[in-house]
Amino acid sequence: MCPIGGALFDGFSRGPTAQLVCHCLLVETEQGLVLIDTGFGLRDIKSPYSRLSPFFIHFNGIQFDKKYTAIEQVERLGFSARDVRHIVLTHLDFDHAGGLEDFPEATVHVMQTEIETAQDRHGFIGKRRYRPEQWDEVKHWKYYSAGGEPWFGFEAVRNLDGLPPEILFIPLVGHTRGHAGIAIDTPQGWLLHAGDAYFYRHEMDSSKRRCTPGLRAYQWMMEVDRKARLLNQDRLRALPCDRNKGVRLFCSHDAVEFKAFADQSSPQNEKVHQEKFVTLDGCGNLQC
Image (tube, rainbow, N blue to C red):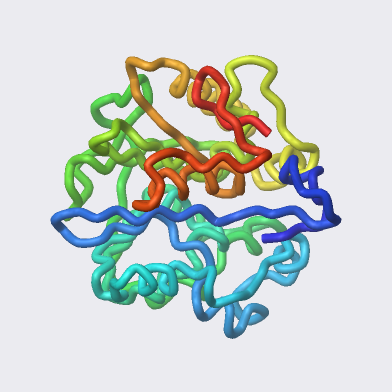
Protein backbone atom coordinates (compact mmCIF):
# COMPACT_ATOMS: atom_id res chain seq x y z
CA MET A 1 0.00 0.00 0.00
CA CYS A 2 1.36 3.43 -0.96
CA PRO A 3 -0.60 6.23 0.73
CA ILE A 4 0.20 9.85 -0.02
CA GLY A 5 2.45 11.23 2.69
CA GLY A 6 5.80 9.51 2.21
CA ALA A 7 7.92 9.61 5.34
CA LEU A 8 5.01 11.06 7.31
CA PHE A 9 3.66 7.50 7.15
CA ASP A 10 6.59 5.09 6.89
CA GLY A 11 9.44 7.18 8.30
CA PHE A 12 11.86 6.66 5.41
CA SER A 13 10.38 7.33 1.95
CA ARG A 14 11.81 10.36 0.15
CA GLY A 15 9.02 10.70 -2.39
CA PRO A 16 5.36 11.69 -2.05
CA THR A 17 4.10 8.16 -1.37
CA ALA A 18 4.85 5.79 1.51
CA GLN A 19 5.65 2.08 1.39
CA LEU A 20 3.47 -0.13 3.60
CA VAL A 21 3.12 -3.90 3.42
CA CYS A 22 0.61 -6.59 4.38
CA HIS A 23 2.94 -8.90 6.31
CA CYS A 24 1.72 -12.51 6.10
CA LEU A 25 3.51 -15.51 7.56
CA LEU A 26 3.64 -19.01 6.08
CA VAL A 27 4.33 -21.80 8.57
CA GLU A 28 5.27 -25.34 7.53
CA THR A 29 3.89 -27.96 9.95
CA GLU A 30 3.25 -31.70 9.96
CA GLN A 31 -0.42 -30.83 9.45
CA GLY A 32 0.34 -28.91 6.25
CA LEU A 33 0.96 -25.24 5.59
CA VAL A 34 -0.53 -22.65 7.92
CA LEU A 35 -0.98 -19.10 6.63
CA ILE A 36 -1.13 -16.23 9.13
CA ASP A 37 -3.31 -13.53 7.50
CA THR A 38 -3.79 -13.34 3.73
CA GLY A 39 -3.45 -9.72 2.64
CA PHE A 40 -5.36 -8.91 -0.55
CA GLY A 41 -6.54 -11.71 -2.84
CA LEU A 42 -6.90 -12.40 -6.54
CA ARG A 43 -10.53 -11.29 -6.57
CA ASP A 44 -9.56 -7.99 -4.96
CA ILE A 45 -7.06 -7.49 -7.79
CA LYS A 46 -9.58 -8.36 -10.49
CA SER A 47 -12.57 -6.36 -9.21
CA PRO A 48 -11.42 -3.99 -6.46
CA TYR A 49 -14.43 -1.69 -6.44
CA SER A 50 -16.90 -4.55 -6.05
CA ARG A 51 -14.93 -5.95 -3.13
CA LEU A 52 -13.40 -3.01 -1.29
CA SER A 53 -14.37 0.44 -0.10
CA PRO A 54 -13.35 3.22 -2.53
CA PHE A 55 -12.46 5.27 0.54
CA PHE A 56 -9.76 2.82 1.61
CA ILE A 57 -8.65 2.04 -1.95
CA HIS A 58 -7.65 5.67 -2.43
CA PHE A 59 -6.71 6.57 1.14
CA ASN A 60 -4.27 3.64 1.38
CA GLY A 61 -3.05 3.77 -2.21
CA ILE A 62 -3.57 0.03 -2.63
CA GLN A 63 -1.37 -1.50 -5.34
CA PHE A 64 -3.44 -4.10 -7.18
CA ASP A 65 -0.77 -6.42 -8.56
CA LYS A 66 -1.08 -10.20 -8.61
CA LYS A 67 2.55 -10.68 -7.60
CA TYR A 68 1.79 -9.31 -4.13
CA THR A 69 -0.95 -11.84 -3.33
CA ALA A 70 -0.35 -14.66 -0.88
CA ILE A 71 -1.46 -17.35 -3.34
CA GLU A 72 1.02 -16.11 -5.96
CA GLN A 73 3.87 -16.19 -3.45
CA VAL A 74 2.85 -19.59 -2.07
CA GLU A 75 2.90 -21.01 -5.60
CA ARG A 76 6.25 -19.34 -6.26
CA LEU A 77 7.62 -21.43 -3.38
CA GLY A 78 6.50 -24.59 -5.17
CA PHE A 79 3.28 -25.20 -3.20
CA SER A 80 -0.36 -25.09 -4.23
CA ALA A 81 -3.49 -23.64 -2.65
CA ARG A 82 -4.40 -27.13 -1.43
CA ASP A 83 -1.20 -27.31 0.60
CA VAL A 84 -2.48 -24.46 2.79
CA ARG A 85 -4.62 -26.43 5.22
CA HIS A 86 -5.24 -23.70 7.78
CA ILE A 87 -5.46 -19.90 7.86
CA VAL A 88 -5.17 -18.07 11.20
CA LEU A 89 -6.36 -14.45 11.18
CA THR A 90 -5.27 -11.62 13.42
CA HIS A 91 -8.58 -9.97 12.45
CA LEU A 92 -10.98 -9.59 9.53
CA ASP A 93 -10.08 -6.16 8.16
CA PHE A 94 -10.10 -5.88 4.35
CA ASP A 95 -6.29 -5.86 4.10
CA HIS A 96 -5.90 -9.03 6.15
CA ALA A 97 -8.70 -11.29 4.88
CA GLY A 98 -8.86 -10.54 1.14
CA GLY A 99 -7.12 -13.75 0.11
CA LEU A 100 -9.30 -16.20 2.07
CA GLU A 101 -11.19 -17.40 -1.00
CA ASP A 102 -7.92 -18.14 -2.83
CA PHE A 103 -7.56 -21.12 -0.45
CA PRO A 104 -11.06 -22.71 -0.59
CA GLU A 105 -10.12 -25.91 1.24
CA ALA A 106 -8.43 -24.22 4.19
CA THR A 107 -9.97 -24.05 7.66
CA VAL A 108 -10.09 -20.44 8.84
CA HIS A 109 -9.42 -19.72 12.52
CA VAL A 110 -10.54 -16.42 14.07
CA MET A 111 -11.65 -15.05 17.41
CA GLN A 112 -15.40 -15.36 18.08
CA THR A 113 -15.75 -11.67 18.96
CA GLU A 114 -14.12 -10.68 15.67
CA ILE A 115 -16.50 -12.63 13.43
CA GLU A 116 -19.49 -11.39 15.41
CA THR A 117 -18.37 -7.78 15.06
CA ALA A 118 -17.63 -8.22 11.35
CA GLN A 119 -21.07 -9.68 10.71
CA ASP A 120 -22.79 -6.87 12.64
CA ARG A 121 -20.79 -4.03 11.15
CA HIS A 122 -22.03 -0.49 11.58
CA GLY A 123 -20.77 3.08 11.33
CA PHE A 124 -18.65 4.68 8.61
CA ILE A 125 -15.48 2.73 9.41
CA GLY A 126 -17.18 -0.54 10.37
CA LYS A 127 -19.05 -0.82 7.09
CA ARG A 128 -15.89 -0.16 5.11
CA ARG A 129 -13.26 -2.09 7.06
CA TYR A 130 -15.22 -5.36 7.07
CA ARG A 131 -16.02 -6.68 3.59
CA PRO A 132 -18.21 -9.83 3.66
CA GLU A 133 -17.56 -10.23 -0.07
CA GLN A 134 -14.06 -11.37 0.88
CA TRP A 135 -15.14 -14.26 3.11
CA ASP A 136 -18.77 -15.18 2.35
CA GLU A 137 -17.66 -18.33 0.49
CA VAL A 138 -15.44 -19.68 3.27
CA LYS A 139 -16.73 -23.18 4.11
CA HIS A 140 -14.73 -24.12 7.18
CA TRP A 141 -14.57 -21.79 10.18
CA LYS A 142 -13.26 -22.29 13.69
CA TYR A 143 -14.05 -19.71 16.38
CA TYR A 144 -12.32 -19.13 19.71
CA SER A 145 -12.92 -17.23 22.94
CA ALA A 146 -10.28 -15.53 25.06
CA GLY A 147 -9.01 -17.25 28.17
CA GLY A 148 -6.67 -20.04 29.08
CA GLU A 149 -3.16 -20.62 30.31
CA PRO A 150 -1.20 -17.33 30.21
CA TRP A 151 1.62 -16.65 27.76
CA PHE A 152 4.22 -14.26 29.22
CA GLY A 153 1.46 -12.48 31.12
CA PHE A 154 -0.96 -12.36 28.18
CA GLU A 155 -4.09 -14.43 27.84
CA ALA A 156 -3.56 -17.24 25.35
CA VAL A 157 -5.86 -19.45 23.32
CA ARG A 158 -4.14 -22.80 22.99
CA ASN A 159 -4.89 -26.10 21.26
CA LEU A 160 -6.34 -24.61 18.10
CA ASP A 161 -8.40 -27.24 16.34
CA GLY A 162 -6.25 -29.24 13.91
CA LEU A 163 -3.15 -27.13 14.52
CA PRO A 164 0.07 -28.02 16.36
CA PRO A 165 0.38 -26.80 19.97
CA GLU A 166 3.15 -24.40 18.96
CA ILE A 167 0.61 -21.97 17.40
CA LEU A 168 -1.42 -19.78 19.77
CA PHE A 169 -3.89 -16.90 19.65
CA ILE A 170 -2.87 -13.97 21.87
CA PRO A 171 -5.89 -11.62 22.25
CA LEU A 172 -4.79 -8.00 21.69
CA VAL A 173 -8.03 -6.02 21.72
CA GLY A 174 -8.09 -2.36 20.71
CA HIS A 175 -7.68 -2.05 16.96
CA THR A 176 -10.79 -4.24 16.64
CA ARG A 177 -12.88 -5.98 19.30
CA GLY A 178 -11.61 -9.42 18.34
CA HIS A 179 -8.07 -8.54 17.31
CA ALA A 180 -5.36 -11.05 18.25
CA GLY A 181 -1.70 -11.68 17.74
CA ILE A 182 -0.46 -15.08 16.61
CA ALA A 183 2.43 -16.63 18.56
CA ILE A 184 4.53 -19.43 17.07
CA ASP A 185 7.05 -21.44 19.06
CA THR A 186 9.93 -21.96 16.62
CA PRO A 187 13.33 -23.64 17.06
CA GLN A 188 14.80 -20.12 17.27
CA GLY A 189 12.34 -19.01 19.98
CA TRP A 190 8.91 -17.41 20.04
CA LEU A 191 7.73 -15.36 17.05
CA LEU A 192 4.73 -13.06 17.52
CA HIS A 193 2.77 -11.70 14.57
CA ALA A 194 1.20 -8.73 16.37
CA GLY A 195 -1.13 -7.80 13.51
CA ASP A 196 -2.32 -4.21 13.91
CA ALA A 197 -1.64 -3.98 17.65
CA TYR A 198 0.95 -1.41 16.53
CA PHE A 199 1.86 0.02 13.11
CA TYR A 200 5.35 1.49 13.38
CA ARG A 201 8.61 -0.09 14.56
CA HIS A 202 9.52 2.71 16.97
CA GLU A 203 6.29 2.22 18.90
CA MET A 204 8.07 -0.80 20.38
CA ASP A 205 11.17 1.10 21.47
CA SER A 206 11.78 0.65 25.20
CA SER A 207 12.38 4.37 25.60
CA LYS A 208 11.51 7.47 23.55
CA ARG A 209 8.86 5.54 21.67
CA ARG A 210 7.30 7.38 18.76
CA CYS A 211 5.05 6.97 15.75
CA THR A 212 4.82 8.86 12.47
CA PRO A 213 1.95 11.38 12.22
CA GLY A 214 0.27 9.47 9.39
CA LEU A 215 0.23 6.11 11.15
CA ARG A 216 -0.72 7.66 14.47
CA ALA A 217 -3.76 9.27 12.83
CA TYR A 218 -4.65 6.03 11.04
CA GLN A 219 -4.57 4.07 14.29
CA TRP A 220 -6.82 6.63 15.95
CA MET A 221 -9.25 6.44 13.05
CA MET A 222 -9.44 2.63 13.13
CA GLU A 223 -9.35 1.91 16.87
CA VAL A 224 -12.43 0.71 18.77
CA ASP A 225 -10.92 0.83 22.27
CA ARG A 226 -8.05 3.29 22.76
CA LYS A 227 -7.38 2.38 26.38
CA ALA A 228 -7.05 -1.32 25.57
CA ARG A 229 -4.95 -0.65 22.46
CA LEU A 230 -2.42 1.50 24.31
CA LEU A 231 -2.31 -0.89 27.27
CA ASN A 232 -1.51 -3.80 24.95
CA GLN A 233 1.22 -1.75 23.27
CA ASP A 234 2.79 -1.13 26.68
CA ARG A 235 2.72 -4.86 27.40
CA LEU A 236 4.14 -5.79 23.99
CA ARG A 237 6.95 -3.29 24.38
CA ALA A 238 8.42 -5.29 27.24
CA LEU A 239 8.69 -8.55 25.28
CA PRO A 240 11.70 -7.97 22.94
CA CYS A 241 13.88 -6.48 25.69
CA ASP A 242 13.54 -9.48 28.00
CA ARG A 243 16.06 -11.95 26.65
CA ASN A 244 14.70 -14.66 28.96
CA LYS A 245 11.45 -14.60 27.01
CA GLY A 246 13.13 -14.86 23.63
CA VAL A 247 10.23 -13.26 21.75
CA ARG A 248 10.66 -11.62 18.35
CA LEU A 249 7.67 -9.61 17.20
CA PHE A 250 6.53 -7.72 14.14
CA CYS A 251 3.39 -5.90 13.03
CA SER A 252 1.47 -6.14 9.78
CA HIS A 253 2.35 -2.99 7.88
CA ASP A 254 5.90 -1.81 8.63
CA ALA A 255 8.05 -2.28 5.52
CA VAL A 256 11.34 -2.03 7.44
CA GLU A 257 10.32 -4.83 9.80
CA PHE A 258 9.19 -6.89 6.82
CA LYS A 259 12.54 -6.43 5.09
CA ALA A 260 14.51 -7.54 8.13
CA PHE A 261 12.38 -10.62 8.83
CA ALA A 262 12.17 -11.62 5.17
CA ASP A 263 15.95 -11.52 4.89
CA GLN A 264 16.31 -13.54 8.09
CA SER A 265 14.01 -16.25 6.76
CA SER A 266 15.70 -16.45 3.37
CA PRO A 267 17.78 -19.66 3.02
CA GLN A 268 20.39 -17.65 1.11
CA ASN A 269 20.96 -15.29 4.02
CA GLU A 270 22.28 -16.56 7.34
CA LYS A 271 22.45 -13.00 8.65
CA VAL A 272 20.11 -10.05 8.27
CA HIS A 273 20.96 -8.04 5.18
CA GLN A 274 21.23 -4.48 6.46
CA GLU A 275 19.78 -1.85 4.16
CA LYS A 276 21.00 1.71 4.71
CA PHE A 277 17.88 2.54 6.70
CA VAL A 278 17.86 -0.59 8.87
CA THR A 279 19.84 -1.06 12.09
CA LEU A 280 19.08 -2.79 15.36
CA ASP A 281 19.16 -1.29 18.82
CA GLY A 282 20.19 -3.12 21.99
CA CYS A 283 16.75 -4.68 22.41
CA GLY A 284 16.58 -5.99 18.85
CA ASN A 285 14.20 -3.20 17.81
CA LEU A 286 14.48 -1.86 14.30
CA GLN A 287 15.87 1.65 13.97
CA CYS A 288 15.43 3.96 11.01
